Length: 148
Image (cartoon, rainbow, N blue to C red; front, top):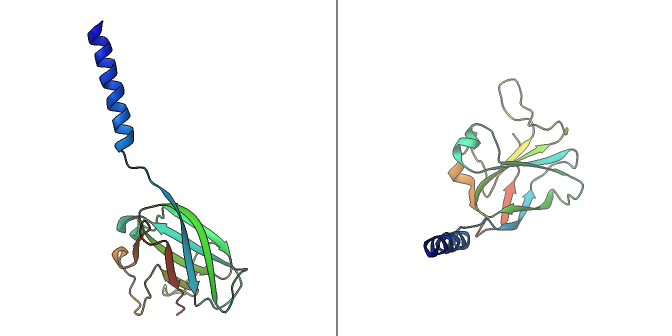
């Protein structure tokens, strides 16, 4: 009987210590400052990626859509809650509100786009590591919209 009690207490103690030692994701408020927006028509689509593979496969962890009704001088700020961690944020200025980026016949975007803390100067799609952000440390994210 004593063995069963001791075993039960050891299991209970182990589970208690395990629950205290496990890291829990802490939600934080992310603030995305978007500038360079050319019109107030349509929506802004923010896609959130966790790694290079999901980015390359265009399978975001989350997708958020915001109306462009609070734009002043081509800029706006959007806020949302997200678990702390490392992410890459992409943005589409979905001017016609069809839920995707429109491209011309050779695949060049006809609508604006941007990446977290990265401004695309060439026509080459950036790697995930070039625009990833640690949301534990940085809660303010800047995105400058580019139009081609």
